[in-house]
Length: 167
Image (cartoon, rainbow, N blue to C red; front, side):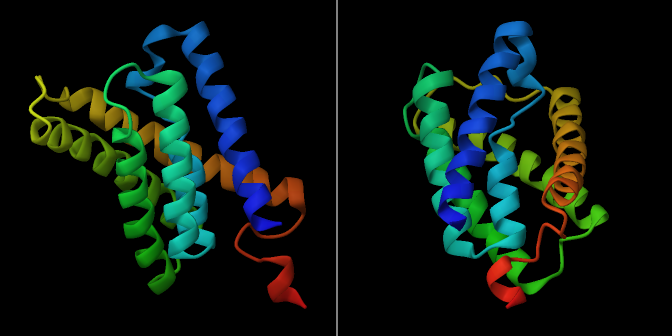
């Protein structure tokens, strides 16, 4: 059941990201909704689950939203899922401040990994504009906080509490 929720979260975020890109073409510079399922799994689930969600979401993002190097978003989000899943299993990030900080940190890591991987692949990289990276990190942190709160209200239980663990 948990993997079905992860797939549903990926598909919803992919659809919202595509719709947002249609309405506001430069939104990809400031909003990456595909980081939300990775953060959700990294904070509330296992490290392996966060890696799988990151890989699947990143590859779908590459295939449908980005023309260019296929697999770069899949690799970035897998690596981010691994790191956040490891940190999330050791520290309690399932609180508003932890969600905000983890969302902002994941966005910063995504931007830095993008530059590094593109240089590694010998692609022309102009480097991210600092203001754009900061705004993207703040937006992702706020989206993490709001989406977790929304999920708590929708389900009627804290986002980190699983039905299996309550039994």
